[in-house]
Length: 211
Image 1 (cartoon, rainbow, N blue to C red):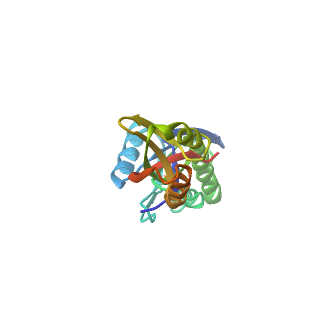
Image 2 (cartoon, helix red, strand yellow):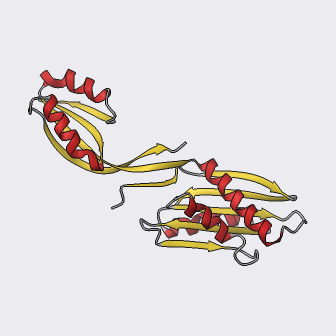
Image 3 (cartoon, rainbow, N blue to C red):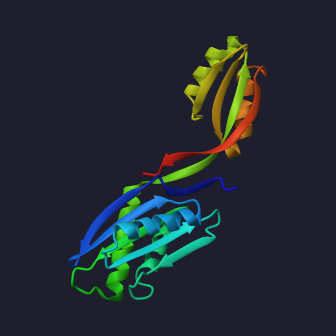
């Protein structure tokens, strides 16, 4: 299971005009190929009157699903440059569609490659790139006499506090990075003189803005 990777926060769109041609870019997260294909289909339906609806997506832990489609543009001038932007930025589980409304001026192969690359970059910026980092949700069980110290130390640390449950004893739920579980456990053990009981409740990804 991957620990950290980049993807887009969610849906985003942008528009640029190059030599009178409109390039509309639509970006979204897609964690399966079906999600990517559905997104592309929906954009094509919305812009059936466009000259081209070019697309690219990268999906999977090891980027094992990569597709690019020029949709009528000269081979290699649209979908591939779009895919290359995703790869160069290290973005996974993401689908991009660039819709072109031709403005009457031909751009040539090099011009098209630059245009679709720029349009993709703008769309990704609009969708916002995030870093997804695998975390372990730790349950820390302590006696009420330790609550004040534990809560204060956690809130002043880099470990995100999820919630506190008040029962016969106190249950403090804290996120730790996947590779920092033992460091956290040692820290908490020392803080409570070995009185804290700890266990991993679940593993999940937390998202952090890149910019």
